Amino acid sequence: IVGIMSQFAIGISGNDYYLPGSSIVFDVVSYAPGSVTDTNKVFALRVSDDSIAYVDGHTVVIRDVTEITTSNPHFEVTVYSEPNGLEQTFEIYVYIPLDSVVASPKPIRLEENNAYALTDLLECSLTPNNATAESIRYELVDVDESIATIRDGKLIINDDLPAGVVTVSLCVEINGVKSNAVEFDVYKPAHSITLDAEVNGEALSDTNLPISSKNTADT
Image (tube, rainbow, N blue to C red; front, top):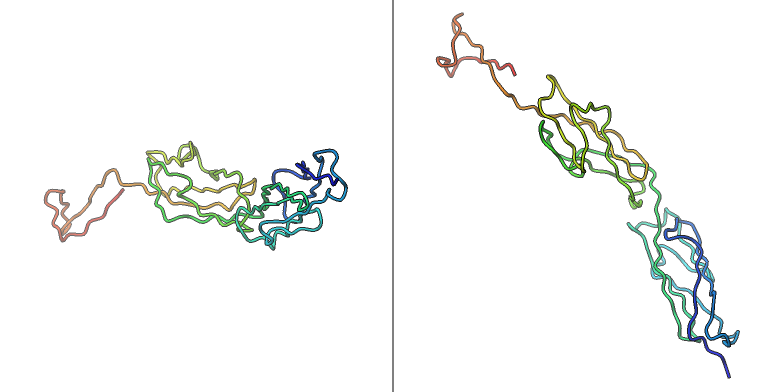
């Protein structure tokens, strides 16, 4: 009588996420029934995407970061025993470390007394471009709280900004890696306009100002 496995339990080395270049060792930690013969204590591996990982005996080797081009790379490993008709599948996720972040402004105009979603302000380029972005945090750079603050995922531009050119600088931090600072000009609409004009040396009021005369606006 040849003992056949009715079930087996597989153990794997590692964590939930695996880095490029790492190896995952698979092993059978228990057999059922206990009377299964040694000739049937065999198993093999196969991967669902060999562009991310390959099989080497009872080990799955994840390829180098330069070889993995997909975003959010993951694949399945199937452990199977043909003599026993058994198999078990594992989902493996690969963590691609982030090297750098370059931020650039999106086409948007900031105005005082307004709020803007932070995701509408910056375009981010990651290196490598398929790096895993786990945590994202936005930060103002050398901006006084009287001008702008960040709250609830939005950039809040305050009202009644000081005279002159007002700018807001913003950067983003992804997985602890900070981007460059991106500067935005803040548009301040005029609250009042005073017109000074004269014709032949005589000052004119607003009510008798000719349309063709030269005007200067002081905001």
